[in-house]
Length: 150
Image (tube, rainbow, N blue to C red; front, side, top):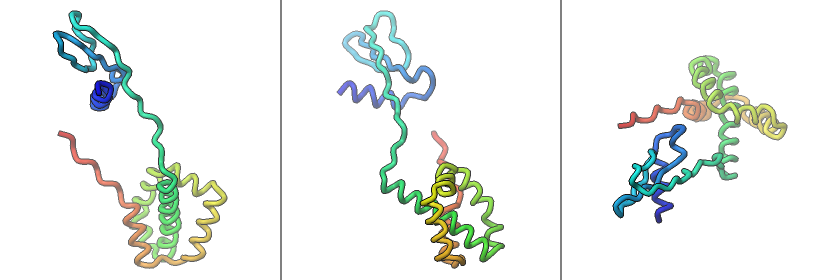
């Protein structure tokens, strides 16, 4: 139970060089967890805060991300080729999406299997339909800013 409490408290501490160590202070029968060292008259135990590992994505989520990426890359090109004004209006959003998803775009552009899927999508849907273009526009829309913290 105390380890769970320590982990929860560690997760709420601000990030920084000192945030990696959590101190368990026992003084007068009371236990307190804090980021600073304990007072001299308290019993102190230094705890290592859990460090987050690399984010893992489930295979289904990764496949969905690739499918969405292919839809955006091929859809933007099809819509922009078919309706140049549409492409001009949304080019900045598309470039920002590409920057936010640089790793995914690089995979699509460099992996032969994904290049093949891209070519197949472009061949099957050469022209942008209003529905497809609306979907692409919604997918590349800039992410809303998070609400300010209180």
